[in-house]
Amino acid sequence: MVDEEKLPWELVDEILSRVPPTSLFRFRTVCKRWNVLFYDKTFMNNHKMTFRFILATESKIYSVSIDPKIEVCELTLYFPGLEYQKPQYLVDCDKFLLYGLDKGAVVWNPWLRQSRWIESSEIKQTPMQFSGIGDVDRNYKILASCSPTGLPNKSWCKIYDFASDAWKDYGSGDGIEERSSYVTFGDSVSLNGTLYWVAIEKTHKSFHLACFDFSRGKFIKGRNLPCEKTNSLKDALVLGVFKGDRLSLLKQCHKTKKIEIWVTKYKVNTNLAREDVEWINFMEVSSPNFPSLVYYSQPSYFIEDKRLVVCSWDKIGRAWIYVLGENKLISKSHIDYVVDPWPFHCTFIPSLVPVPRSQREELAELQV
Amino acid sequence: MSSSKKSSDGKSSEIEEAVASLTMPFNKILLTSSDGESFEIDEAVARKFQIIAHMIEDDCAGKAIPIDNVTGDILSKIIEYAKKHVVEPDEDEDEEAKKKLDSWDAKFVEKLDLETIFKIILAANYLNFEGLLGFASQTVADYIKDKTPEEVREIFNIENDFTPEEEEAIRKENAWTFNG
Image: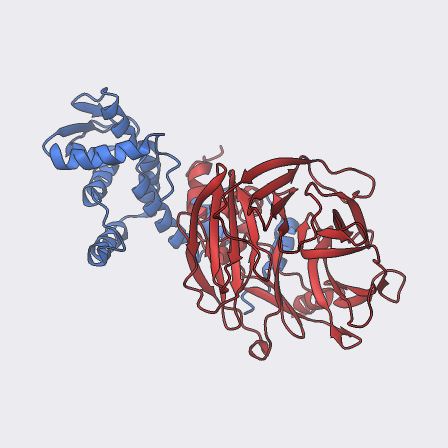
């Protein structure tokens, strides 16, 4: 005779959405259903300790949650030597955050409080910037690149493999990637283990979708993006993830301040060169009094339930959260808790995926 | 507080709730539990249970309402909580009152065993009493957070459907947590 479980599933969900993340991580072995739940984005979105943005100043890091109201929490990240380096960039890598500093980057899962320092190398005295984290069947890798000053049209790329804890040169061995025809613009978006960017084709100044496919180990340039050509980098043009398996594109024309959002009609894969990606117009907000979203850097945003939530700097470097929907601005709030100006920011939905270790470290664990 | 369970005119019932508690404090409602126990409560208190609030609005609440799914002992506890929470103090405006209420809440659950709390969760869900559902769920969440997976299975009566190898593979990933 099988005893019935004490509570129906929806009430167990209510309880689990209030359990702290480190406990949830431990509870993955309770049963298969719980294990699957902890990787469900809807569950993450509704968890009481969820958040949507990460902000980083020189001295502090914060998480920002939006529902039911805007709340800011200070996060702690301790790393030996962290205090002697300055934050350089912050990238949402879907399951992890890449917190870039002078000499490398920290791969971080704030919910699990796990972090790992990856040192970067220098090419001709120019430090490499980590572009993003992808994976091939859960073998995680980092793409790093740099374009040394004085060497136009040449960029070096290296790929870091977590399992072997080693760097490999991209391509034929000398690491040089001649992307003379196009340049990536803005931060990468990590989707299904692949990195996607907006790419600008240099001669025609047209905008394309590009990706780095870790399984084939190469860059692929796709067809045009659905936004008009523009010569201005004062326009906002930001790629994002939509509904977990599609891409979104936000554009704001700096003259009209009109915001347009397109989303891909279907799931995106890496066959960008051969297959056309179909985009559909998702949302438009026209408001002449709306501020520019670009002051020295591009905005970060996410889309949920027909709402667009944007984080960007104003002209004096304060971070604002704008909520738009139904073709108008619904609310705007200044994040005054963050005192230092010009904080780095990115979207991030918490995950319960552990920061990968090298095989060497795993074997060492087993021998203990 | 998000209100996925509120009706589409949740705003108007909020106003009605406030009006009811001011202008009709003497309107009584009789609730009868599944095992025949009766409880007479103010309409304002009864309205904390959305299922009853809807009945009152739709004019199909008689003087006596049978609560078929809840026994008397549990219903009395729920009514006790509802009476204390008829008016929720605003955290920002009345910190003192919020602290007092939190302290009362803590004492309220302290005396209850887990079985009872589960029954309260089921009943609060049935009655659509969001405040108590949230509070009781939080209580259970706090209780289980330091337990082992085995203990959690016992608490919820969940069957372990992992093979020992599968469980070991997942547990290996646990090995290095809390690293800064």
